[in-house]
Image (cartoon, rainbow, N blue to C red; front, side, top):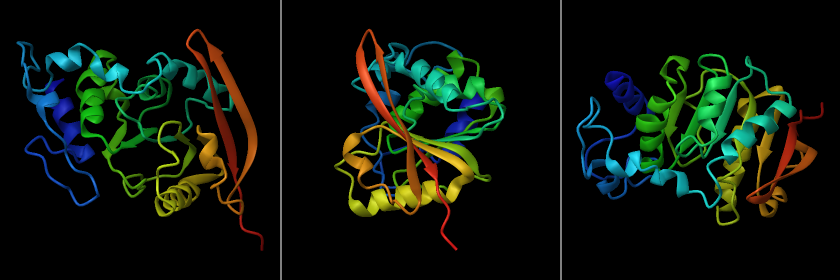
Length: 231
């Protein structure tokens, strides 16, 4: 398992050394989260007490359990085991652990700007849930890139990252890349009412607005279908 963790971290583009800018606009932040308070396990040089304490479950402002709700929502929207999913803002795999388990091998792609989140997702969540055989592709990236994906996807999931503070240029790039990577009948799923007005109407049209309620409150998602240029 230790070798699997190292391989996936390497493939994600993460550096395990000192903080630096990797050229994608990502500054590797204070590495104390990753390298402090080692403990004795077979992967002691890869996991620390903060990760084992699951502090990354509290990064989101919403319960970790919403990842399972997301899987149920996507099934309602037509997700099948053979579907291919790209998640922008995959974080420490709150949604990913459920999607990776459900989907066929190699059909989950995720990217995130935060090195600590990706590290926790790969070194802890992937290990805890025995998901390495599913061969997900996870990339450290802050520009909504798609160059690491070798096939079209059926769903682009972005329920955490399309926020009003993002620049118009970055949102435009995100929507363009989403359109480029989606299958002809692909769906874009987002959360955040303030950015729905930025969706390019010549590329996507809204097909559903869903609201979910649980013991923690309610949340909304918007579902868009890929459109094709008029001839």
